[in-house]
Length: 291
Image 1: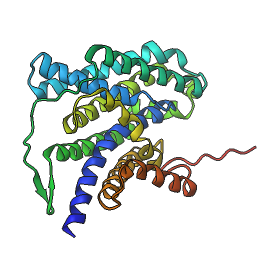
Image 2 (image 1 turned 60 degrees about the vertical axis):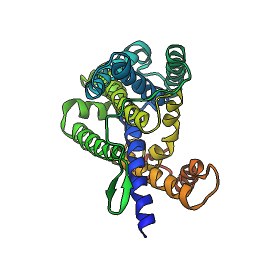
Image 3 (image 1 turned 180 degrees about the horizontal axis):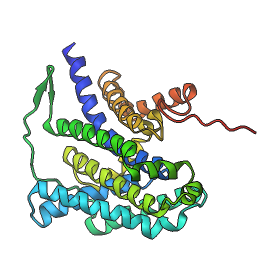
């Protein structure tokens, strides 16, 4: 029983990291209707920016994290202005191809500047595991759970109670109608990309601490796709629940099934089964088209 509880706690902790990464996808889709395949590369770039601030420049780690989040916010806004502002009102497939181009471009820049060698952050948290409900958990996973909880509460309130949050929801529903009532779609796009880039950087710092800072971190952008679709593309709580389910399923699969690499495919098996039953995800909007 204690072993099952330990796997559950660790799975939730890992799932919290996936939830943070998934949040960036949902924020952009919820505000703009765009499925952003560049999110993984922004996560990877965020981890490298934090490495530069903390190791290359030598700033205290917590200050380096704050500067990384600020730089990621500005970078997300810049990406939107340079590459995506011209795509407002264009077919979604064209915009999707632009995000793939951004992903490849950022990945290439990372390889040109930092190469393929892995790097490590300074030790800023205790390495001694903490016992929670009989399970031994590293402090960084506790940080991930707390960070995920804070981010999700903040953004749920943001979309519900702020004017820009309401404008982002209206823009996702119909860009042309939103413009006709005075909403600046360009501003909505800029804010959504900036915030999504910030959440990607936060995820990059946490993942870079757990693993290492490497160009392969951009794989997380694709690894969390089952979590996003499982929870529903437009649902912030769905991103949280989808990430947690993904983390728990992955950890239990790796622990009890015993096949090499099974933890990598279990999330996709769950996704395929669920989509046969609930095509829009657990909390996704059901769209009915009448002909």
